[in-house]
Length: 393
Image (cartoon, rainbow, N blue to C red; front, side, top):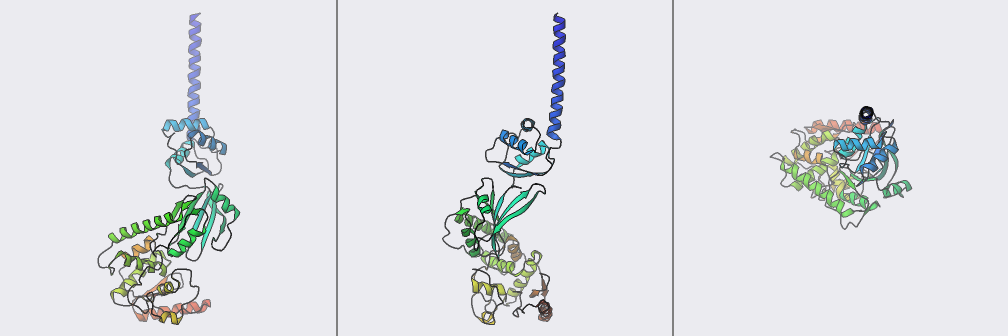
Protein backbone atom coordinates (compact mmCIF):
# COMPACT_ATOMS: atom_id res chain seq x y z
CA UNK A 1 0.00 0.00 0.00
CA UNK A 2 2.79 2.38 0.89
CA UNK A 3 4.40 1.66 -2.45
CA UNK A 4 1.18 2.72 -4.20
CA UNK A 5 0.92 5.85 -2.09
CA UNK A 6 4.55 6.77 -2.85
CA UNK A 7 4.04 6.13 -6.53
CA UNK A 8 0.92 8.30 -6.59
CA UNK A 9 2.70 11.07 -4.70
CA UNK A 10 5.63 11.04 -7.15
CA UNK A 11 3.21 11.13 -10.04
CA UNK A 12 1.44 14.13 -8.48
CA UNK A 13 4.76 15.91 -7.92
CA UNK A 14 5.79 15.29 -11.52
CA UNK A 15 2.44 16.60 -12.77
CA UNK A 16 2.78 19.68 -10.57
CA UNK A 17 6.32 20.26 -11.85
CA UNK A 18 5.17 19.93 -15.43
CA UNK A 19 2.29 22.34 -14.75
CA UNK A 20 4.64 24.77 -13.01
CA UNK A 21 7.14 24.60 -15.86
CA UNK A 22 4.37 25.20 -18.35
CA UNK A 23 3.07 28.13 -16.28
CA UNK A 24 6.54 29.62 -16.09
CA UNK A 25 7.07 29.20 -19.82
CA UNK A 26 3.68 30.79 -20.49
CA UNK A 27 4.44 33.65 -18.09
CA UNK A 28 7.78 34.31 -19.76
CA UNK A 29 6.15 34.32 -23.16
CA UNK A 30 3.41 36.68 -21.97
CA UNK A 31 5.98 38.93 -20.31
CA UNK A 32 8.48 39.15 -23.16
CA UNK A 33 6.25 38.63 -26.17
CA UNK A 34 4.26 41.25 -28.10
CA UNK A 35 1.49 42.88 -26.13
CA UNK A 36 -2.20 42.98 -27.06
CA UNK A 37 -2.47 46.74 -27.79
CA UNK A 38 -3.19 47.49 -31.44
CA UNK A 39 -2.71 51.24 -31.05
CA UNK A 40 -0.30 53.41 -29.06
CA UNK A 41 -1.19 53.76 -25.40
CA UNK A 42 -0.67 56.71 -23.08
CA UNK A 43 0.38 55.25 -19.73
CA UNK A 44 -0.01 57.72 -16.87
CA UNK A 45 1.85 57.05 -13.63
CA UNK A 46 0.45 59.21 -10.84
CA UNK A 47 2.73 60.52 -8.07
CA UNK A 48 3.19 57.76 -5.49
CA UNK A 49 1.29 55.20 -7.60
CA UNK A 50 1.77 51.55 -6.63
CA UNK A 51 2.78 48.80 -9.03
CA UNK A 52 -0.57 47.12 -8.38
CA UNK A 53 -2.51 50.24 -9.42
CA UNK A 54 -0.41 50.75 -12.54
CA UNK A 55 -0.71 47.09 -13.57
CA UNK A 56 -4.51 47.23 -13.16
CA UNK A 57 -4.66 50.44 -15.21
CA UNK A 58 -2.58 48.85 -17.98
CA UNK A 59 -4.79 45.76 -18.03
CA UNK A 60 -7.94 47.90 -18.15
CA UNK A 61 -6.46 49.90 -21.06
CA UNK A 62 -5.66 46.69 -22.92
CA UNK A 63 -1.93 47.42 -22.93
CA UNK A 64 -1.09 44.15 -21.12
CA UNK A 65 -2.78 40.78 -21.00
CA UNK A 66 -2.25 39.91 -17.34
CA UNK A 67 -1.68 42.24 -14.39
CA UNK A 68 -0.20 39.48 -12.17
CA UNK A 69 2.44 38.53 -14.76
CA UNK A 70 3.32 42.22 -15.12
CA UNK A 71 3.86 42.58 -11.35
CA UNK A 72 5.80 39.32 -11.12
CA UNK A 73 8.06 40.37 -13.99
CA UNK A 74 8.71 43.75 -12.40
CA UNK A 75 9.61 42.01 -9.12
CA UNK A 76 11.93 39.62 -10.95
CA UNK A 77 13.71 42.52 -12.66
CA UNK A 78 14.05 44.40 -9.37
CA UNK A 79 12.01 47.36 -10.67
CA UNK A 80 8.82 46.99 -8.65
CA UNK A 81 9.64 50.12 -6.62
CA UNK A 82 11.17 52.21 -9.41
CA UNK A 83 8.05 53.70 -11.01
CA UNK A 84 8.56 57.28 -12.22
CA UNK A 85 5.77 59.86 -12.22
CA UNK A 86 4.73 61.01 -15.71
CA UNK A 87 2.78 60.22 -18.86
CA UNK A 88 4.50 57.90 -21.28
CA UNK A 89 3.71 56.83 -24.83
CA UNK A 90 3.84 53.06 -25.30
CA UNK A 91 3.93 51.87 -28.92
CA UNK A 92 1.48 49.28 -30.30
CA UNK A 93 2.35 45.71 -29.41
CA UNK A 94 4.82 46.69 -26.68
CA UNK A 95 5.74 43.80 -24.39
CA UNK A 96 5.33 43.95 -20.62
CA UNK A 97 9.11 44.02 -20.31
CA UNK A 98 9.29 47.04 -22.63
CA UNK A 99 6.51 48.83 -20.75
CA UNK A 100 8.30 48.30 -17.43
CA UNK A 101 11.40 49.83 -19.00
CA UNK A 102 9.39 52.89 -20.05
CA UNK A 103 7.60 53.55 -16.76
CA UNK A 104 10.73 53.09 -14.65
CA UNK A 105 13.17 55.02 -16.84
CA UNK A 106 11.50 58.37 -16.22
CA UNK A 107 12.37 61.47 -18.24
CA UNK A 108 10.06 64.00 -19.89
CA UNK A 109 6.45 62.99 -20.36
CA UNK A 110 5.74 61.96 -23.94
CA UNK A 111 1.94 61.89 -24.09
CA UNK A 112 -1.23 63.07 -22.44
CA UNK A 113 -2.99 66.41 -22.22
CA UNK A 114 -0.81 69.50 -22.22
CA UNK A 115 -1.53 73.22 -22.04
CA UNK A 116 1.21 75.45 -23.44
CA UNK A 117 1.60 79.20 -23.09
CA UNK A 118 3.58 80.23 -26.17
CA UNK A 119 5.13 83.67 -25.83
CA UNK A 120 5.93 84.72 -29.38
CA UNK A 121 7.34 87.86 -30.95
CA UNK A 122 4.15 88.71 -32.80
CA UNK A 123 1.54 86.84 -30.79
CA UNK A 124 1.04 85.04 -27.50
CA UNK A 125 -1.24 82.00 -27.51
CA UNK A 126 -2.39 79.31 -25.11
CA UNK A 127 -2.57 75.95 -26.86
CA UNK A 128 -4.33 72.75 -25.76
CA UNK A 129 -2.89 69.56 -27.22
CA UNK A 130 -3.62 65.91 -26.71
CA UNK A 131 -2.20 62.72 -28.14
CA UNK A 132 -4.01 60.79 -30.84
CA UNK A 133 -3.57 57.18 -29.75
CA UNK A 134 -3.89 55.89 -33.30
CA UNK A 135 -1.11 58.03 -34.73
CA UNK A 136 1.00 58.58 -31.63
CA UNK A 137 1.14 62.27 -32.54
CA UNK A 138 -0.06 65.33 -30.67
CA UNK A 139 -3.03 67.17 -32.12
CA UNK A 140 -4.22 70.68 -31.38
CA UNK A 141 -7.57 70.71 -29.63
CA UNK A 142 -8.04 74.44 -28.93
CA UNK A 143 -6.16 77.72 -28.71
CA UNK A 144 -6.72 81.34 -27.76
CA UNK A 145 -4.89 84.63 -27.28
CA UNK A 146 -5.14 85.43 -23.54
CA UNK A 147 -4.69 89.15 -24.20
CA UNK A 148 -7.68 89.49 -26.53
CA UNK A 149 -9.89 86.40 -26.24
CA UNK A 150 -11.90 84.55 -23.61
CA UNK A 151 -10.46 81.27 -22.37
CA UNK A 152 -12.29 78.35 -24.07
CA UNK A 153 -14.08 75.98 -21.72
CA UNK A 154 -12.03 72.99 -22.88
CA UNK A 155 -8.77 74.75 -21.98
CA UNK A 156 -10.13 75.78 -18.59
CA UNK A 157 -11.10 72.16 -17.93
CA UNK A 158 -7.72 70.86 -19.07
CA UNK A 159 -5.87 73.24 -16.76
CA UNK A 160 -7.76 71.72 -13.82
CA UNK A 161 -6.83 68.12 -14.67
CA UNK A 162 -4.41 66.64 -12.16
CA UNK A 163 -2.42 64.83 -14.85
CA UNK A 164 -2.29 67.69 -17.39
CA UNK A 165 1.15 69.07 -18.17
CA UNK A 166 1.48 72.86 -18.09
CA UNK A 167 4.34 74.55 -19.90
CA UNK A 168 5.53 78.04 -20.76
CA UNK A 169 7.40 78.28 -24.05
CA UNK A 170 9.35 81.51 -24.53
CA UNK A 171 10.55 82.18 -28.07
CA UNK A 172 13.87 83.80 -28.96
CA UNK A 173 13.65 87.53 -29.55
CA UNK A 174 10.67 88.37 -27.34
CA UNK A 175 10.99 91.30 -24.97
CA UNK A 176 10.79 91.15 -21.20
CA UNK A 177 7.59 93.21 -21.29
CA UNK A 178 6.00 90.64 -23.61
CA UNK A 179 6.95 87.81 -21.24
CA UNK A 180 5.52 89.60 -18.21
CA UNK A 181 2.27 90.43 -19.99
CA UNK A 182 1.94 86.81 -21.11
CA UNK A 183 2.46 85.19 -17.71
CA UNK A 184 0.12 87.73 -16.11
CA UNK A 185 -2.63 86.84 -18.60
CA UNK A 186 -2.88 83.09 -17.91
CA UNK A 187 -4.93 81.74 -15.02
CA UNK A 188 -2.89 78.63 -14.24
CA UNK A 189 -0.17 80.83 -12.69
CA UNK A 190 -0.54 82.98 -9.58
CA UNK A 191 1.12 85.88 -7.78
CA UNK A 192 1.99 89.46 -8.65
CA UNK A 193 4.82 90.76 -10.81
CA UNK A 194 6.13 94.00 -9.36
CA UNK A 195 8.44 95.02 -12.21
CA UNK A 196 9.55 94.04 -15.69
CA UNK A 197 12.94 92.24 -15.62
CA UNK A 198 15.86 93.89 -17.37
CA UNK A 199 15.77 93.49 -21.14
CA UNK A 200 17.78 90.51 -22.31
CA UNK A 201 17.91 88.92 -18.86
CA UNK A 202 15.41 86.10 -19.53
CA UNK A 203 16.31 82.83 -21.25
CA UNK A 204 14.14 81.72 -24.18
CA UNK A 205 13.32 78.11 -23.31
CA UNK A 206 10.50 75.74 -22.34
CA UNK A 207 9.53 75.79 -18.68
CA UNK A 208 7.47 73.08 -16.98
CA UNK A 209 5.16 74.58 -14.37
CA UNK A 210 2.46 73.42 -11.98
CA UNK A 211 -0.96 74.95 -11.54
CA UNK A 212 -0.69 77.81 -9.08
CA UNK A 213 3.05 78.37 -9.49
CA UNK A 214 4.23 81.88 -8.68
CA UNK A 215 4.81 84.17 -11.64
CA UNK A 216 7.70 86.00 -10.02
CA UNK A 217 9.41 82.69 -9.25
CA UNK A 218 9.05 81.64 -12.89
CA UNK A 219 10.63 84.93 -14.05
CA UNK A 220 13.44 84.41 -11.55
CA UNK A 221 14.11 80.95 -13.02
CA UNK A 222 14.19 82.46 -16.52
CA UNK A 223 16.75 85.01 -15.30
CA UNK A 224 18.82 82.34 -13.57
CA UNK A 225 19.06 80.29 -16.76
CA UNK A 226 20.02 83.31 -18.87
CA UNK A 227 22.71 84.36 -16.41
CA UNK A 228 24.16 80.83 -16.48
CA UNK A 229 24.15 80.75 -20.30
CA UNK A 230 25.82 84.14 -20.59
CA UNK A 231 28.46 83.28 -18.00
CA UNK A 232 29.35 80.00 -19.74
CA UNK A 233 29.50 81.55 -23.22
CA UNK A 234 31.49 84.55 -21.97
CA UNK A 235 34.06 82.29 -20.30
CA UNK A 236 34.50 80.29 -23.53
CA UNK A 237 34.86 83.33 -25.82
CA UNK A 238 37.93 83.86 -28.00
CA UNK A 239 40.23 86.82 -27.47
CA UNK A 240 40.02 90.04 -29.43
CA UNK A 241 36.29 90.75 -29.44
CA UNK A 242 35.16 94.38 -29.09
CA UNK A 243 33.21 93.81 -25.86
CA UNK A 244 34.37 94.96 -22.46
CA UNK A 245 31.66 93.23 -20.45
CA UNK A 246 29.22 90.31 -20.76
CA UNK A 247 26.41 92.87 -20.89
CA UNK A 248 27.84 94.33 -24.11
CA UNK A 249 27.94 90.84 -25.62
CA UNK A 250 24.31 90.37 -24.57
CA UNK A 251 23.37 93.62 -26.31
CA UNK A 252 25.04 92.42 -29.50
CA UNK A 253 23.33 89.04 -29.20
CA UNK A 254 19.93 90.72 -28.98
CA UNK A 255 20.66 92.67 -32.19
CA UNK A 256 21.75 89.47 -33.96
CA UNK A 257 18.58 87.75 -32.73
CA UNK A 258 16.34 90.47 -34.15
CA UNK A 259 18.20 90.78 -37.44
CA UNK A 260 17.81 87.23 -38.73
CA UNK A 261 15.41 84.35 -38.35
CA UNK A 262 17.84 81.98 -40.11
CA UNK A 263 19.84 80.13 -37.48
CA UNK A 264 22.82 79.45 -39.74
CA UNK A 265 23.19 83.17 -40.49
CA UNK A 266 23.69 84.31 -36.91
CA UNK A 267 27.52 84.07 -36.91
CA UNK A 268 27.65 85.93 -40.24
CA UNK A 269 25.36 88.70 -39.01
CA UNK A 270 27.45 88.95 -35.86
CA UNK A 271 30.58 89.27 -37.98
CA UNK A 272 29.09 92.24 -39.83
CA UNK A 273 28.43 94.17 -36.63
CA UNK A 274 31.76 93.19 -35.06
CA UNK A 275 33.53 94.38 -38.22
CA UNK A 276 31.65 97.68 -38.07
CA UNK A 277 32.58 98.23 -34.42
CA UNK A 278 36.22 97.44 -35.11
CA UNK A 279 36.29 99.87 -38.06
CA UNK A 280 34.60 102.63 -36.11
CA UNK A 281 31.46 102.45 -38.25
CA UNK A 282 27.98 102.91 -36.85
CA UNK A 283 25.86 99.78 -36.56
CA UNK A 284 22.95 101.28 -38.56
CA UNK A 285 20.38 98.61 -37.70
CA UNK A 286 16.63 99.11 -37.79
CA UNK A 287 15.71 96.87 -34.82
CA UNK A 288 17.52 99.18 -32.39
CA UNK A 289 15.64 102.20 -33.76
CA UNK A 290 12.35 100.32 -33.44
CA UNK A 291 13.12 99.39 -29.84
CA UNK A 292 13.79 103.04 -29.07
CA UNK A 293 10.26 103.80 -30.29
CA UNK A 294 8.33 100.89 -28.74
CA UNK A 295 10.57 100.14 -25.72
CA UNK A 296 9.67 96.54 -26.37
CA UNK A 297 5.98 97.11 -25.63
CA UNK A 298 4.39 95.72 -28.77
CA UNK A 299 5.18 95.51 -32.46
CA UNK A 300 5.79 98.42 -34.84
CA UNK A 301 3.62 97.27 -37.73
CA UNK A 302 4.87 99.84 -40.22
CA UNK A 303 8.07 101.00 -41.80
CA UNK A 304 10.34 103.46 -40.07
CA UNK A 305 9.79 107.11 -40.91
CA UNK A 306 12.61 109.32 -42.11
CA UNK A 307 12.09 111.53 -39.04
CA UNK A 308 12.62 108.49 -36.80
CA UNK A 309 15.80 107.53 -38.61
CA UNK A 310 17.08 111.10 -38.23
CA UNK A 311 16.18 111.51 -34.56
CA UNK A 312 19.10 111.38 -32.13
CA UNK A 313 18.19 108.84 -29.45
CA UNK A 314 20.31 106.31 -27.49
CA UNK A 315 18.85 103.48 -29.60
CA UNK A 316 19.20 105.11 -33.04
CA UNK A 317 22.35 103.40 -34.26
CA UNK A 318 22.18 105.47 -37.45
CA UNK A 319 22.89 108.57 -35.38
CA UNK A 320 24.97 107.36 -32.40
CA UNK A 321 28.21 105.41 -32.24
CA UNK A 322 28.65 101.96 -30.76
CA UNK A 323 26.12 99.74 -29.08
CA UNK A 324 22.74 100.88 -27.73
CA UNK A 325 22.53 101.18 -23.92
CA UNK A 326 20.63 97.91 -23.33
CA UNK A 327 19.64 94.74 -25.14
CA UNK A 328 16.61 95.13 -27.40
CA UNK A 329 15.13 91.66 -26.76
CA UNK A 330 15.90 88.40 -24.99
CA UNK A 331 18.37 86.47 -27.15
CA UNK A 332 18.65 82.70 -27.12
CA UNK A 333 21.81 80.69 -26.49
CA UNK A 334 22.57 80.43 -30.24
CA UNK A 335 22.53 84.21 -30.69
CA UNK A 336 24.68 84.72 -27.58
CA UNK A 337 27.14 82.16 -28.89
CA UNK A 338 27.17 83.83 -32.31
CA UNK A 339 27.87 87.24 -30.77
CA UNK A 340 30.80 85.75 -28.87
CA UNK A 341 31.96 83.51 -31.74
CA UNK A 342 31.31 85.49 -34.94
CA UNK A 343 32.46 84.17 -38.28
CA UNK A 344 35.71 85.60 -39.59
CA UNK A 345 34.58 87.61 -42.62
CA UNK A 346 35.16 90.90 -44.44
CA UNK A 347 31.41 91.60 -44.57
CA UNK A 348 30.23 95.03 -43.46
CA UNK A 349 26.78 95.09 -45.15
CA UNK A 350 23.80 92.80 -45.57
CA UNK A 351 20.28 93.05 -46.91
CA UNK A 352 17.34 90.69 -47.43
CA UNK A 353 17.67 88.44 -50.48
CA UNK A 354 14.02 87.44 -50.92
CA UNK A 355 14.45 83.88 -49.65
CA UNK A 356 14.14 84.65 -45.95
CA UNK A 357 17.90 85.03 -45.68
CA UNK A 358 20.35 87.79 -46.51
CA UNK A 359 22.93 88.80 -49.08
CA UNK A 360 26.22 89.81 -47.45
CA UNK A 361 28.62 92.30 -49.01
CA UNK A 362 32.18 93.49 -48.47
CA UNK A 363 31.92 96.80 -50.28
CA UNK A 364 29.34 99.53 -50.69
CA UNK A 365 29.21 98.82 -54.42
CA UNK A 366 28.33 95.16 -53.81
CA UNK A 367 25.78 96.19 -51.20
CA UNK A 368 24.09 98.74 -53.47
CA UNK A 369 23.66 96.03 -56.11
CA UNK A 370 22.16 93.69 -53.50
CA UNK A 371 19.81 96.45 -52.32
CA UNK A 372 18.70 97.07 -55.91
CA UNK A 373 17.87 93.37 -56.28
CA UNK A 374 15.87 93.48 -53.04
CA UNK A 375 13.99 96.59 -54.16
CA UNK A 376 13.04 94.82 -57.38
CA UNK A 377 11.75 91.84 -55.38
CA UNK A 378 9.67 94.24 -53.26
CA UNK A 379 8.32 95.91 -56.39
CA UNK A 380 7.32 92.56 -57.91
CA UNK A 381 5.55 91.63 -54.68
CA UNK A 382 3.75 94.95 -54.60
CA UNK A 383 5.32 95.83 -51.27
CA UNK A 384 6.40 99.34 -50.23
CA UNK A 385 10.14 99.89 -50.35
CA UNK A 386 11.96 99.82 -47.04
CA UNK A 387 14.01 102.76 -45.83
CA UNK A 388 17.54 102.77 -47.31
CA UNK A 389 19.52 101.00 -44.60
CA UNK A 390 22.84 99.19 -44.48
CA UNK A 391 21.67 96.41 -42.23
CA UNK A 392 18.39 94.67 -42.94
CA UNK A 393 15.87 96.28 -40.61
